[in-house]
Length: 564
Image (cartoon, rainbow, N blue to C red; front, side):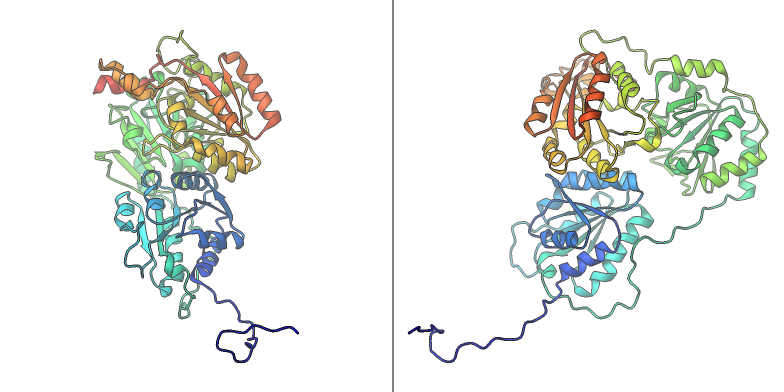
């Protein structure tokens, strides 16, 4: 005889209740709202305060890309946003998860990259929680926005506000939600406004004032040493800008973020600012007019107010500023869309003679990027970059990091703007691998080549595992001088010891193999084309460890050393 055991105290066996429908939790609704924004990819590192949200977000169809450090989640989202033109999305946990973003956020602010970061907050109902901090002041100190959502009634309008602010103001927005609130059933009154989904309708271009165009035409007429300087705001008007330069007899140049916009123009000087070549710097000093189109004229672009000392500065922009980073940047400002304003100028200006001569084109092509003597102790970084520029397929994506070696990687004349990314407005090293991951997710069918310094790469080398796990096609070129390049050159120039900035040549090829990537060392520029061909055949993640000389100082550091 079978004896059934019931609960202590006897009584009838429990009756079966009808199945209940699971209640929607706040993290469920948050995930649905974020998924409606059609961002596509969320870069994440999970913790107690965001793991439920991230899991649900993935179930809503958003690709969750987990990385090994919170900074790398935000940095990868920055590059993804720059490449796609959409809002970048990342998520981190509360407390230490958020504090790891304090380098990425100011970089995104200064680069004007729209970013939304979902960050958990400590539980509201806990009397004490070891990861609890006041997160808002940290975020706002970087220039980013902090949006706390601490009541169900704020969830729907708050998420909409976060994405609208990021898109319209081109600024990072951190959304903080306590993780005990996230787990509660979602109860909120009907939202009286229709929730915004997807992408807003873009506004039409801003036409210039005809009187302003007429005045600018008068200032441009008759000058024979004009440089047309384009920034990111001119990216959609490159053809019109080049036609205008031909009409004015002007040389062309770009800001660093817009590098490559005129890569096929034989009269392009390359970069304006601290990264200018020696030859370009001299031409800027001789210019009598600089016409800046879609460029903010930052201190970097003006090389600390030293680049064009005798030129009349004219600017075409949709966001006029009389003072930029402490200086009056332009003498003449025309407010208007880059393409529409350039087309209006073309309709009014006659053909002018100027600098666009065969002799000038030949000088631009043949002049080295600087006059520093060639290295003899190891590979010269200029020769290395020239060899890579010649060997790399034109359709591959390039990513340039920061640090001393980034000067050389910025000078790749065959690389077009659409295939080159650099974000260095905050001057922080250690971002390159994260940026490459973001580009690889934005361009999944195209190999990505990262140029980084050894000191920079070691800051987040754990992301080698992310590259391998995700099967990303990223070729990492390490310009390895065994030191922090900028620091050793500046210390030496001032007569100081460089011992604390030198750490020896790490074997990055061996480290790569330890992570499951391929890796090889390059000791001869002649070996670069074969290495590229092998990578094109194999794909995946790979490292080329290139030993470069630590005796070659970039013109930027040379000028810095003379000035300070």
